[in-house]
Length: 234
Image 1 (cartoon, helix red, strand yellow):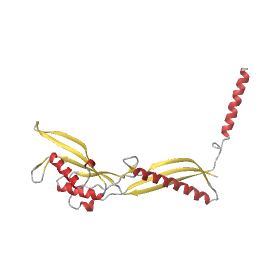
Image 2 (tube, one colour):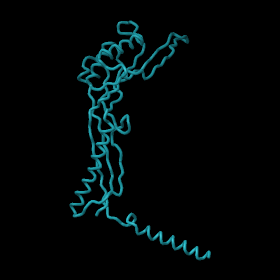
Image 3 (tube, rainbow, N blue to C red):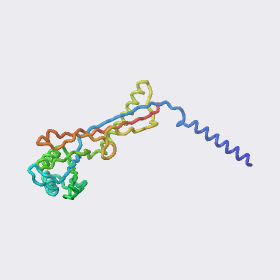
Image 4 (cartoon, rainbow, N blue to C red):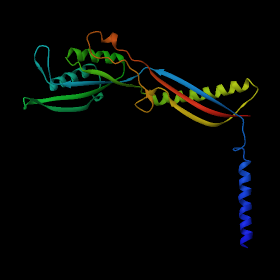
């Protein structure tokens, strides 16, 4: 009885193995491998400006405290019709001032981030900061409100480009494209977005005077996707 059971199991194993070798998935299938690439450029509509405040002495020799700078900054934001919720305190620190081994006071420092929507607002903000003796500011990051949708659109364009390439190459030799056997996203080649994978590019501008409008420029956000696809040939 044991011998009969063993023979039955061996027969079942051989039969299953033979079936797996003859399945279409494991058979030799002619194929073509292609890559599809698509890119999109868009002007940023989210611009973050970092503003650093610290106790200082003005050119006239007067003390210019952080408190006074904060008040002027908030008035400036309100005067430019920028929602106050777009101005946030990012960090704050204090350091003890020591001279000749004696404490002489405390140096304060605060970092604010303001969210803007276009270069015009950046120009106005920088000009206002300059006029208020607040000169430590910089564009820190750019993004776009539709970045998720833009990523999707670029992905679709890239995968369609791969299919089009495979189709016309096979038609040139009298063949037809079949089903995709493998699809690999090579990722975004350049945009490291706050959300994922995009490479934000911006010309940084530091406050320097009345020519802000001429000097503030933003490079467009460049989104690039690439796909590797393996198609069967009918």
